[in-house]
Length: 203
Ligand code: ZN
Image 1 (tube, protein in one colour):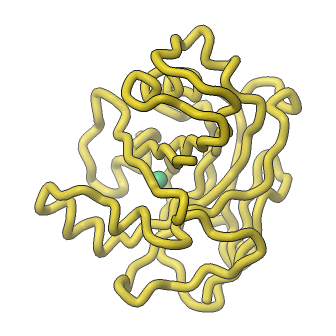
Image 2 (cartoon, helix red, strand yellow):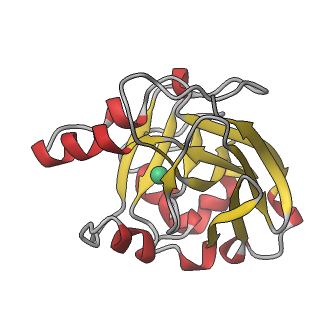
């Protein structure tokens, strides 16, 4: 199982990190060992002083496919979720400055929070989902899939040009603005349309 992640998919988040707007989606992969086991707390790793949360809508791939066209992309997933792409921002900034790959900053153990899954049929329009991240009970990030530069079906089509999608793979669709640092004892909750998808403690 692989985690295929999209970077820079919301204009406001691109601006807050002072990144360039991409002409194509930015894609990276986390290994399956990055998945934070269910019900486990997230431990801030010793190699970073700046772990950022990035709340993201997730899509679970249900069958094998490659070179999937946008029109047929909806046939490759039934479930939608919410998660966190934890990022060691200090490590990532150093790697970015040198033009090096981001794996150490994005693929470390526990760096992928995956909440519960819900059938996509529950939602009328996947391109109009409101979601949020609460930190210690207060809204830290607020997003809407309507603001994605590339929508879910476009992303599936794009990434399947490069990587064969397999049953159980998970697509992280990028984070909206408002990313920030976590500290010991923080409590994070993720919601789509007001419904809780995950809740985790930071240690
Ligand atoms: Zn991200």
